[in-house]
Length: 140
View 1 (cartoon, rainbow, N blue to C red):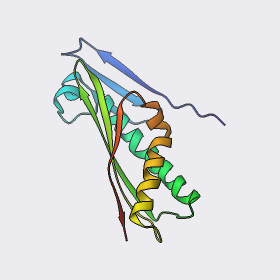
View 2 (cartoon, one colour):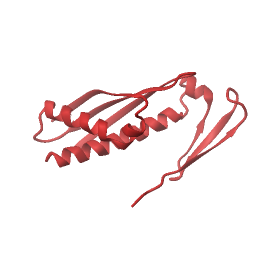
View 3 (cartoon, rainbow, N blue to C red):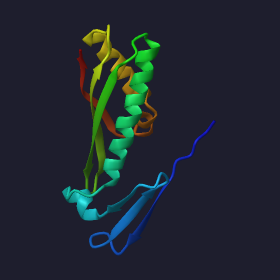
View 4 (cartoon, rainbow, N blue to C red):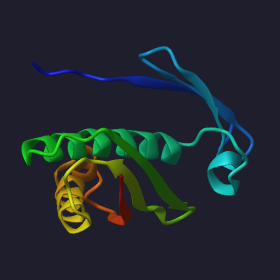
């Protein structure tokens, strides 16, 4: 069954002095500005939304890969950092993951995490940028 996700943005004004509101289908609404995107002023940016998508998708892909390998995880905590340079665009996404997976050694965890990184649908959608797995830490 195919699922379609959606969001919309209403932008007012020019790029530098304007602002917008982005609304996700789920009802989340957030303000967006060029200043926030280029100076990191604390408002939501398109890159932050991509980072959220990448972190959640990778966590799901890793959970699935671990389960398929016979190592169901207790917890997976993933962060993603997506870089942006004005005039250049999105420069990359860096994933950091920590997980508790009973009965799994660090080397196998890293192997499975790298496979999940490559297989994650958001990673595949971001194929035009560098995606790195900065660290994959196994706890417990």
